[in-house]
Length: 453
Figure (cartoon, rainbow, N blue to C red):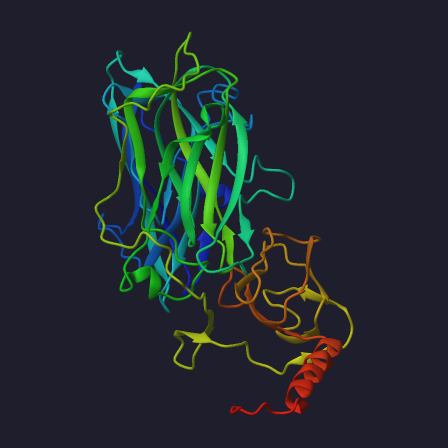
């Protein structure tokens, strides 16, 4: 099946709107045992990343009527049952299991496409399924677990930020605990993470916090297209996240607490990152918690790509348009730098631009961004001494950040990465500068020590 076509402007991002939210669902009763999504052209040929990239796509089953299917984690309407993106993940279950669907189910989707060329392009999102109509299959329930927790007003995008600044080789972790609502067996799981990710695990605290399932990232080799396209929405992510499955299943008791942890490199800034685990459970009455050894048939499979298991060191560039109309890397937006002496400044985000595009502020300055457009925007650090990013905000919202580390911050709106760029230089405090000068002067005035007896 397909939905589209979707036109995407030159070097632009397009994402779900109300008209493209509802998609066709199979007119069948049965079980989905395999599913995959990709971008294709009108002839069904896969579109390469150098043209259009599928940043992400998520499919949700709202059932035949309101209340038929509900989110077992956050309680909303509909079940999120399959998602993929840069990691190109395929949903697949061990023999004997499947996700139940019925005739009349209503499906919705959320997606984002990125055009990497200077000309308009068009793409379909194609989704292929294998459906087994055997009544003997065991149904699985999908659980969409996010380390950021359930969506809250103003915090819908499940992102968090790794500020960086730790020693080389260090690890930053973000975790959340969750209780299994009913007993069952963990059958399959896959993860979604961004650049800088080291690991994504579901652990069992009552059994010594042992890892039950791990979705490990694999990064492309240096010649992979992810590292050679412009503009860049965020640090290039994994080309694969390992997929876990076991027919025997891992028993977990009703009410038992599990812990999801997303591990990232702690040295460099990583903004707008995610840690999402797609977990599938076969619920059975009488299943009890167990610390028995993990099943022998548990596998953690990769797609077979050649790549790197260690996160590569990547610097996200700012992007501008050259005289030839093509994207190019820029060190800063055009225009003069405004130097401010005060400790606070407000930047208006209006008409798809930042009111101050190049700015110099003292150490510790508080910067506010006020959003005036109806279209959503965000402010995201592409590179700098400290990583931060806001949620996507529309008219009337604001974001703020106190800049306590000196250096040059290159920022952009990840939804409009070409039109909206900005640099902020944070100057060191005068007192600190004088203190460093005094120490340097004192060292120079020390008498030389003879090198002979």
